[in-house]
Structures are given as structure tokens and as C-alpha cells.
Length: 86
Length: 232
Image 1 (cartoon, rainbow over the protein chains, first blue to last red):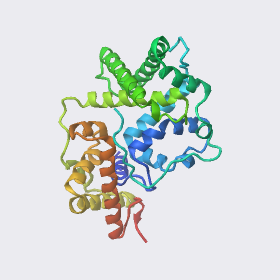
Image 2 (cartoon, rainbow over the protein chains, first blue to last red):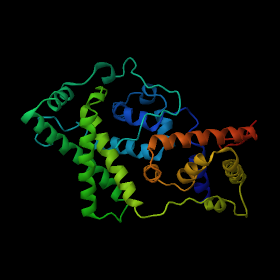
Image 3 (cartoon, helix red, strand yellow):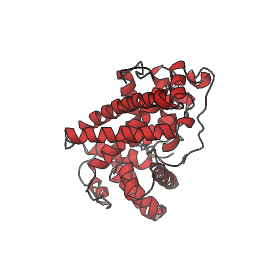
Image 4 (cartoon, one colour):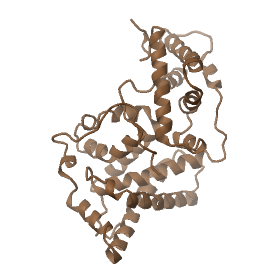
């Protein structure tokens, strides 16, 4: 238990080792990154620094996980402008 | 709201690459329809805005529902209000930033993220409403207990002790304040941004700079910031 807490603090204190983008750039690219992930394409190669940022920023990571989960639940991206279900 | 003004922390540039699907092709037909209708006037515009709000509300409810499991104090009625307000705010943000949509994903995926952001920020702030932010450094002391310990645990303690000491010496007051709140006391970054009247992006930049200074200081002392023990 204490080991887990110490390791967690160490991780939060030092952050990711690899170069990362910031929160604003992360938000800008989040939709594209998640679609690449869902398509099985190399998302980190297309958007370098995104994965380290998600490792170092809990808030952005949560929003990434939510968008991924939402897209998995709704893979067709329901919501055509003419779609009455909207 | 969005995370704040642009503030990249490292010189990493995201770009479209060959074979990167939609990024190279532009918006699909459905996304183009959205853009046409949201740039139209009269009844077609009103109908498209109404449908967009419905989509954003679905995403906001999804997000609030996910977070309710971790925030049981959030009542059902309050959750519904948060989701509706998040959808309203996201609609304003999407319409205001329509010209920034580059067609690198489906329009609905792009729009979803605004609703998820608004909803997640609202729930984080609600969870900390009326609470004092922990500003002290008492948590460092909880890792210094004596007793039998493994070699690995001793190394981790040594690193934490060195980091604690370095926070006093190498960080600016602002960096120490941000680092202590975010990394040590785990205050959500949006909550701290609201209390300090700044943005998520600006706070993360401060945290990133603090982390870099601390890693540099550990290396200077011959310690390995990866947590694996002493550097060669």
C-alpha cells in the first residue's frame, strides 16, 4: 500500500520522461487522436508528445478516456445534422 | 471553457502524415453537411443547432454519469443540471470555434470533446465546492516512517526525500505552490485554475517546468529520476 502511494507520488512529482505537448494542444488534437486509436492507426506517431502528456496530466487523461469510451459506445458517431435521434 | 491559451510545454509538433486517414482527406460528407447547416440561416440553422445540442447533451450526460460513480455525493437532480449546463456551454464553444474545425475527425467527435470537457470540469469543481485547498506539505512526512524496508523502497524514499528538499531550493514560489497542490496534494488542475484565476494550460506549464527542474537537480546529485536508483 505504501509502496503504491510512494510510486504514485514519484510519478506525479517527476512526470513523463518523454517530451510532451501542453494541455491546449492536447485538446486541439484529442478528437483526431482518439479516432486514430479506434482505427488501430499509430496515434502517437501522428501526434508526437500526446501519449506522454496523457501520462503526466490526469485531467486530460480522464477526458481522453471518456471520449474513447463514448466513441466505443457510439461507434457510428450518431448525430447526422438530419438525424432525428439527435 | 477550453483549457486556456496555447501553451505547449515541449517543442513537439503534431502534424498530418501520409496514411493518416481523415487528416489528409478533410471532412467527410456528413461533417461537411454539419458545417453547411451551422453556417446557414433561418430554419435549417435552427434545426441543426437543436440537433447539435442534443448530441452535446448526450455526451455531457455520459460524462456526468461516469463521474457520478466516483462522486456519490452528486445527486441525480444536480447531475442533470450539470449535464444540461455543460451542453449549453459546449454549444456556445462549438459555434464560436466552428472555423477552427479542420476536418481531421468526424464533426461529431470534434464536438463531443467540448461537451466532455465542460462536464468533467463542472463535476471536478462541484466536488471541491466549499472545500479549502490543501496547501501544506504534510504529506511528505507520511513517507518517512522508519521500519523494515526493501532495497527498492529505500531507493524510492531516497528519491522522494531528495525531491522534497529540492522543492525548497530550486523551485520558484509559484512553481512550488503549483507543484505542491497538483503533484503532492492531488488537487484537480481545473479546481486550482479557478482558485488561482488562471488556465489549465498555464498551470500545467508551471508544473512541467517544476518537474524539469527537479529531474535536473536529481541528476546533478547522481540520482536517477526514472526511479530506478542511483545513476551510473
